[in-house]
Every structure is written in structure tokens, then in C-alpha cells.
Length: 332
Image (cartoon, rainbow, N blue to C red; front, top):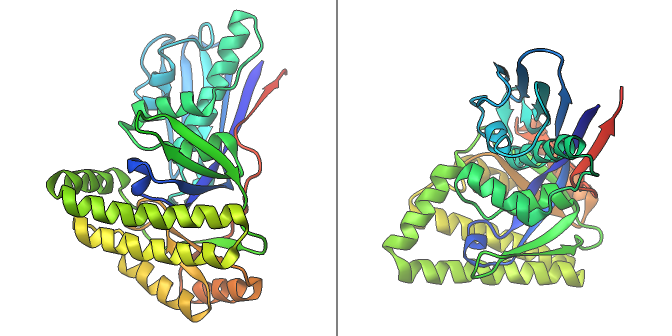
């Protein structure tokens, strides 16, 4: 039998960086999917294929390291008996070989963890149990060496979520909806970002200037909390105002930590968005990658998207993925 799984990507709307310090954040699961498959093999060796911007294949003996971090992390426990063939396909998170910044690693981890659990359950003669969000977040932190886990929560649960970390690192996740009439689109700024480098700069800045960092983080926390409250209350204008304010806060943060969180391309896109009455900000750690445009006026959003396309920026048409991680057993 074969196990198949898929997990959606994400767009962070509010709470970047400050979520690491307890801020309530808001994230969308979006309809770009990482797919995983795993099945027993009659061959003498295991074969794994990673399909992303490029395709990489590894062949190795059962029970031996593959050299691929995610595969080896899950391989510490359970899995199929003997040789197997598997793959993770995250090509939907790339455009022309370039990573868009939609949470591919989190989605890939969720999908691979699910098929690995399916194979483990089959070997142990029980029904599979999908890992919960907290377990997947812990796994992803081991894989990446840290992080809030907000992208994992979106991939696991789907829909629109609020997300916060307690002082003990415990996760609080709530379900919410975008205010009625608010639509969104992704706008790719043309280059991928190095998220770990930006997060390292953020951590170093907090250690070096604790007073200033507390002030600015508190400002970001307040804006994000207001935006989450507006979403829960269905107040579209307050929600969009918070998006714009948080984008400005991220630009201020970039100046403080000495990093181009809001790049020249993102600033240019934001200026055009204002002309169309559209709220715009970077989504995620910034430094490139994708930004998010939101508006309550669908005609204004459509006009902005057409203009962005004419200007040579990549418009990424996205919808909220209502369902998160899915696992399917397929019997040949």
C-alpha cells in the first residue's frame, strides 16, 4: 500500500518577528500544496526524490542515513519495514525555479510526517494518527533550529488562524475569518529571502539593545493584537489599517536591526498599492519573497493586480485553503 499526504502553504498577515516574543499573529493557509508519497519497495535500497526548484534523488540502504535532513529526522523512529520509495513535491511553492516564500519547508515537513506515520501505523497494525500541530511544531523546530511554528500551524490546520506563544513556549491557536469582503493576493518581489539570517539579526539586536527592542516589539505587538481583534469582530477597515501599520512597523524594525526587511521592491509595490486604495505589506521575514495585498474593494484589488503584472512583478493568485494536512491510503 502507498501513503499520500498534502499540506497547504501560508501567508503571514500580522505578527512577523514579534510573534517570537509573545505577540498574537494572524496567518492564512493558502492553496499551494506540498505533497508526499511513501510506499514499500521490492528493491534492495530505499529511494527518495525531492521535487522543488530542482529535483534531487537519493538512494541508500534501509536504516541508513539518506543525507536529507527531514528524511533522516523522521527516520529516527518508525517508518516502513525494509526498503521503501518516497518523494516530497513542493514545486507549487516555486515559480521559474525561485522559491516564493509560502512556507514550503513547513508544508513539506507536515506531509512527510503524515506519510511516515501512515507507514508506521501499517507496520504496527493500527490506524494512523495524524500528528497534532504542537508535535509538528516541535519537529520543525528541531529541523530548522528554532522558529515560532506559525507556518506549521497553518499547514496542519488550514483556514485562517491566530497564533501566539506563551512564556513557556506553549502554542495558542485560534480559528478566525477574514472580515467579509476582504480579498487578498500575493505579490512576489522578484527574489528569495534568507529567513534564518534575518532572524539571527533580530535576535542579536534584542541582545544588544534590550530597551529599544522592548519598545519596538511592544509597538508591533499592539498593532498585531488590534488587527487580530478587528478580524474577530469583522471590522474590515480596522483590519486593513492594522495591516498597513504593521508593514510600516516592519520597515522601522529593519532599520533598527540593520537589515532590508522591506526591500526597495516592496516599498515600490506598497507605494503603488496606496494609489489603488489597497493595503500591502511584506509577508513573513521579508528581505524579498512574497508580500500580501488586501482590500475590501474587489475591483480595486483586481486593478492593482493588473497593474503589478504590467510592472513585471509576479502576481500570485491564492485562495484560503480551508483544510490543512490530509493523509490518504492507496491500495494498488
